[in-house]
Length: 99
Ligand SMILES: [Zn+2]
Image (cartoon, rainbow, N blue to C red):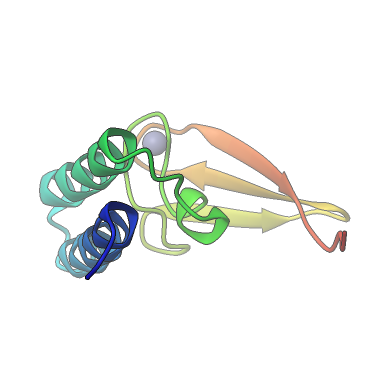
């Protein structure tokens, strides 16, 4: 039997896959809808999205972020800037740190 969080995780991952398919077809509204749904499921099931998924969408507008398609990734010395093409929001991450 799958636990509630396992079901949530499965659904969320599926939604991210669907969102990516829609984004590649340039169906931006559907892309955002899938991401919004994935976040909703996560909240409802108290499932924290893993880091790699959290970084894959824009928190401001729910757009799936794929460099060259929906966002621009700019590498700096220690950080990476991700600019969302949909709402122009810029998020900065540090990378290369190993804890
Ligand atoms: Zn955005």
